[in-house]
View 1 (cartoon, one colour):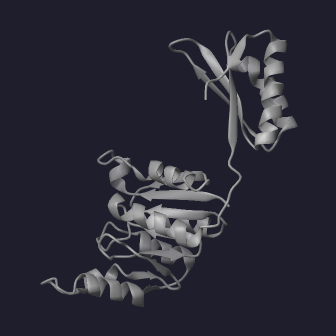
View 2 (view 1 turned 90 degrees about the vertical axis):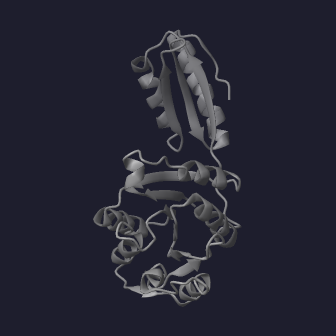
Length: 249
């Protein structure tokens, strides 16, 4: 099972606000032994949002989308999700009940604009919002949450607890060595040899120039294969005549 995150908002791309959702999603999944496979930032562009969701709806990944589910003119996520799925937006009865309950005692009452926040793609289910009762929604394997962390993060926890309590993923492990006196180009063939021997692993090279020049060379993936692959890299680096040491985890 793979998990992805879409984070929406012009304010993030302009630098007006700093995103906090990505780090929280990574940490929340990690608490359950799960990992994030990918993330994507999008501006408030309805066509781009729809195109992105059309692509992710066609896959099997579990996707969490943060932002843009309100009713203001710059909120496009609900409409774009419906367009991507080829279904109409409809007022969800449970969402309507939550919104009416939220604004029952408000002097302005339950306005059409407020009810719009409960219009989801036909076939969606609500995600309860413990902060102010304005729900998010689940459609297929996608879960749409508000952009406000105080709302979105408890809702993320709720989705994981209620939909993926028994989800599991083979947690990747990583091993690396610090290689000195070598340039990256001198290690390319060794890295390719490692990939040919262990195609399911990821091989990485992370050069540093300060405080001292070196390359962190490593592998990531299944624990049993990682142990074999790092041994191959260690032997290969030694045969090339470069000094190396174990990287500190």
